[in-house]
Image (cartoon, rainbow, N blue to C red):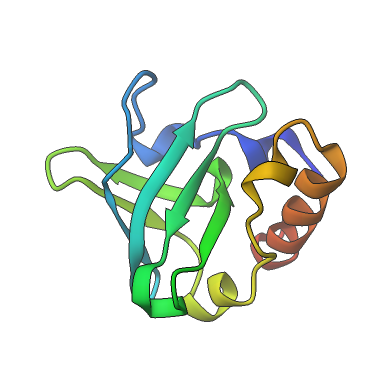
Length: 117
């Protein structure tokens, strides 16, 4: 798995230091929720999306590499995944993901299959 998976793409128009919390998240086929948490740690950046009622309150961890566009004016993040890919993603476990390389690898492997990274 490459570091690219966990880094924002320069073409996504993400400006370091910008909080994405509260931004709506759009999959390639529609809205999936709002950003609940974000980080810009070098080589370990991600967003946590609260899917609300769409997947019955499930939260998902999306590596920063899935972000294809950030629109600060519209407060919107677009990702290069479908709703189905996100729905089938590994369950986000906030207690497990911090400092757990195995969990991060599991998430990264799931998305790398879909992204071809």
